[in-house]
Length: 294
Image 1: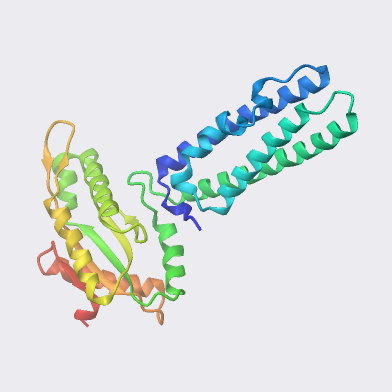
Image 2: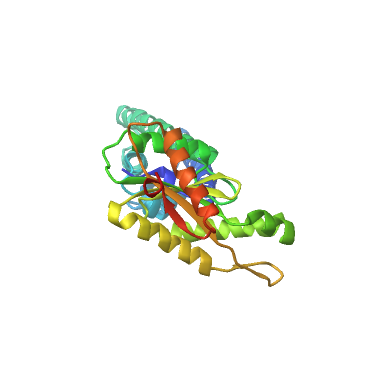
């Protein structure tokens, strides 16, 4: 099952916009079928070609979504129904004009398939819109609302070695005061991208608020600290380039705790926050594990 949460904010917007354009195009295609049937005119290649479903605008766009949606039930349903719509339309073109009953039968089938495809596309659009609402528009990460539902699901799951980590950009107020909030935003975007590109697809990063991020990572206990500390080192070595050629370097502090299923998500986050506070108090640019300080 594909996790639509992994689709970025900008990608979701692109899919929604293009789907809308493709569905408009398909409705125009359907209207041309109706006109041809009513006027008893010959059908164009877009109706008679065996590969018409691949050559139309919708077919071309669906192929571009394979990397993001392949394996999703809803995507497979759209692919199937889109093919059936074109196959049924082609079948209509091969029936003699005088065979009204056969045409009516196929036309009813075409309408049902077309309506089913519109319904399934609407479901996909609603899912994508729901994800957009739960995405931080600046960084493209999941926001705090999505974080809470995701951590609740992990807490109720069976993974034994899940951790909650809070990361905080060190002295971020100084960055905003010195360079302005626009540069501060660039720093946050850069850090978000670094974390996304240096963690596994199965791990999830959320914008917690301001300059704080929450990470949900599943890994063996003996590897967790190294994973997070490696992320800390990558951030410390990175540079954010501004539009006027300045290079901004920052560090980040981390607090981690293993997910305790006997306490609430809020309490787990509180434990991670206590570990983060210890990192800050100990000089910043470091990782502290809650279990090591209690």
